[in-house]
Each structure stands twice: as structure tokens, then as C-alpha cells.
Length: 164
View 1 (cartoon, rainbow, N blue to C red):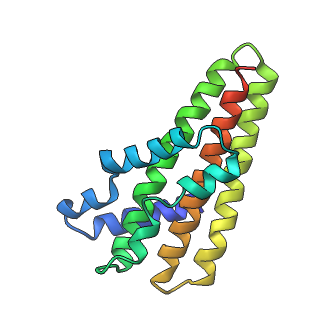
View 2 (view 1 turned 180 degrees about the vertical axis):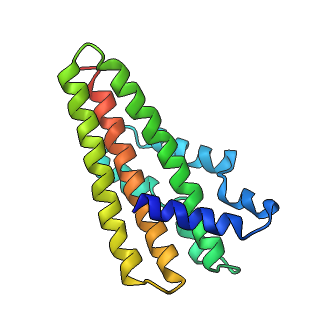
């Protein structure tokens, strides 16, 4: 599913001028918004962090006065990129700390691969549900963004647990 969402994103990127491509790159302010939320909610449970931090960039786009499929997809992609970067960073740090424990490192890698399959299957539902319509890219992107944010915060908890 991630490959499908990525392919859709690439097709969309190829269909717009290079100037519009910046619409898909998160700004420093958007990255800071997510980072500040993560820092502010550091003592909260994962579920509380998820409810407070996921959607800070993309959710307001739906109600923007000039909202359309393109702008909503762009917002989803920008936030998903932020979460994906965080996820990859925390995963890398966790794997680095697990260098002395090959079994745990392999288990974490297996879990991450299984999560990717789960995310792709879950978000694939939305693509099939709205197949042929413009809402498919919105629903699929929304799902991918949310699931990536959830997994990023889960990975942060896994990484932080390694300190104990």
C-alpha cells in the first residue's frame, strides 16, 4: 500500500510544475510544530501523544477555505514525511542500541517489516473503497499519515525503553 501511495504521489508530482512540488515538502515550521508537540507530551501515554500530535499539520487543511484534493493530499504527504523521518530516526537509534543483542535487533526488524505490511493492507482498504475517485488519494494518504505517526510514537517508546 505504501508503494501504491508513493506511486500516486509520484504521479501527482509529475503532473504539476516543479514550483508546486514544494507543496509536498514539510516546512521548518511544520517540523517544529510536530517536534514541539512531541516534546510537550513527553510524559504522556502513547495514546495521548497520538491524539495530541498526529494531525497537527494535515487536519486543518480539510477546513481551509481553498481546500481541494490537491491541497489535502499535499498536507497529508507533508505530515506523513515528518512522521516517517521521526520513525526512521528512532528505529535507527533503537537498532544502534541493540547491536549487542542480535535476537532483539532481529525481532525489532521483523516487527517493523510486519508493521509495514499491516499499514499497507490497512490503508489499501481505503484505496479500494474509493477506487476510481479523487477521494481515494485523500483517504489513503490520511490513513498512511496516521499509521506512520502512530508507529513513530510507538518506536520512540521502544527506543526510550532501551535506556532502562
